[in-house]
Length: 263
Image 1 (cartoon, rainbow, N blue to C red):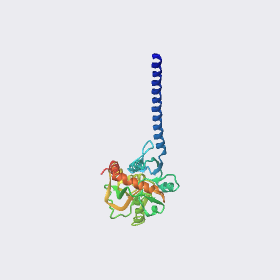
Image 2 (image 1 turned 90 degrees about the horizontal axis):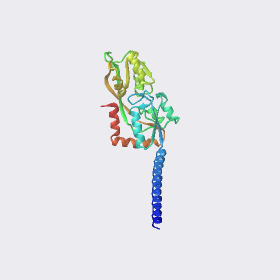
Image 3 (image 1 turned 120 degrees about the horizontal axis):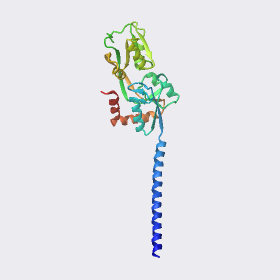
Image 4 (image 1 turned 90 degrees about the vertical axis):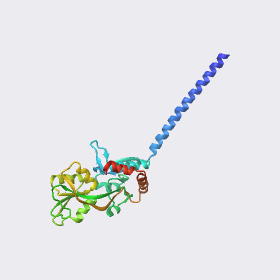
């Protein structure tokens, strides 16, 4: 009789342990499923950048995208608890692509201009830029007396517009506009441009590998504020503004500026 009781007690204990193990496994599976559900429930934000405007955005040899804009976009997505899908888009087609709903927003070093405000909404600025002249250090280029020069810039940018409005056809000057700053800089290095007008951050980045050239004259402050573009009336604007405020106040935006631009 005692053997039966011991056997029955052992069976009960084994059953309890088995049920406990099953319950533990079920709880782990449930927790894992909950985490997976939460991850899948995150909305995905598809964000376009140019991928050809270092150090704001550029394409790595393996095809991945990097730069200040890419890191800002990722920080904002994290703040908004959203998945971030960043794609490259040629500059000339970047606003048309947004309007065609190929992506949800543009984070590409884009300046707020009256012309763009007619087509898209902008968030609060996340960076402010100035323009500078780039020329060969010994060229004698004088920004105060520009005549009979070939001047380069990027098409559909604030410096490009500035060149067209203030120099094209005046005093014998000719303006060459390109699809990217890289091509404008190539023609500067080859002598086909006498000078290039560019955003200061872009110019300083190019100068790192081109010591024969220099920033000539003073910076030009044309109230160039850079922001995120979204479609007209899109509620994402308010969400991005809130996230921008958060990463500005917690110091993350300043850290990204320091990491990408230095002082």
